Image 1 (spheres, helix red, strand yellow):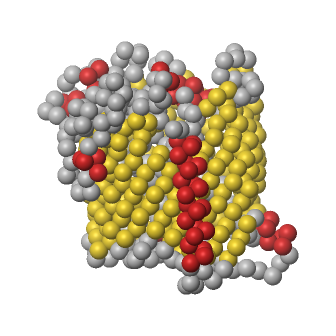
Image 2: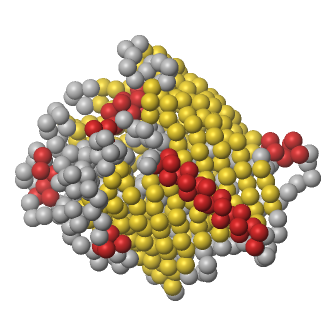
Image 3: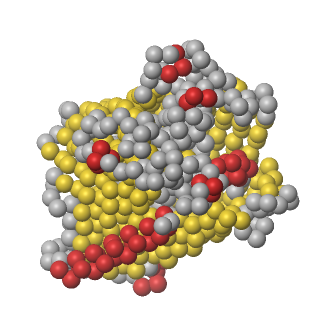
Length: 527
């Protein structure tokens, strides 16, 4: 069964539960939503309403849903969702989504998967729907499905052809010598029976951390099925997630479909003081199949206790364990310092010391200017981190990393700032990174986390940046006029400059675009 079929079934199940609950709900219903990349700062960090912010998205109550007295056409275009049903017992919001933009890139790209013809024209053509709602303050539902055709700038096009997947989206097929054809779907059903428990059944992505990047679990990936449970008691929040990932880099060789692996993710977050949070993290990746593609599933795959799991999967393969800390400290109102430490299972040899850390600060309403937010961050990960002895236990899903998009063996500094004034929105992002690439296909200096550990080129002390020394600069500026704040329908234009250089290559990408955007998803290819 495909992931798209799984998502569609989950969407139907969620819709069925929603209809049943609508018929039985009796209490006044607030508007429940989940955070996104556009409102995280204002919802989670500009106030002290949330003690635990590390695991995202976060369910919250929106208090600004007020219906105006304008005409129906004006409200639908500028103020409301296309489908907006608000009753004393429930809320339902839905939209027919389109996301259309076109632009030009300086470095010409192939016009199709197989063609040698090249063009400087880039575009995205997205159509689909988004539906969300809630019943009372206990049930929240969300689902979306998009069909896409697109042509991407050079570095994204190269990524797609190398890894056979569109970042954040899905696998693809060629589209009439004009680019790629692909789909995207996600679904989520959240139940909060009381203030202590939360259950989240979904097909999507998750993020752990308070920074722009995450070294523990990132949303720089495609959707996957998961079940998450969170327990809040006193100053502690304990979260456990079970998930299923795609394992192999070339699943097309398997007649039975893409091989799968199992993920167990734990986070114990302690609200230590009014200003300080400390989180203990553990993720376990284990194989679900043996060499004959037979499923091997054991009780340890369902352990609800952090650190309490077997060292090997029932198929006999050694698990991949990732450990970490997540720290947040509120320096001042709307100003938060944060950090992470990641430890991959290390050995005694110098090259086996695999870890990484993050430090950063984020500020809202900077310089007392409402709507001005900024974030400054540094990340570094040592060589060979996240990799494993086999691809079926590497910390990856669907040919993309589950943590930082640069993989391992890198140092990165970034600045992100955005400003909202009435209906205007502007965003600036700058990234400077240094990393060590492989000088040949047979070399393994530790950045490519898909390569098995036993192929390591360095046998003694490993150093971050070893291998083919590569420099990356990424600059991104965007300006938008928001037509509808509820749906994020906006007219947007932007420009991106990316330069990647080493002794073997000098790639420069410069592209511009303009379009009508209609999404809260972070479709920014900053890698």
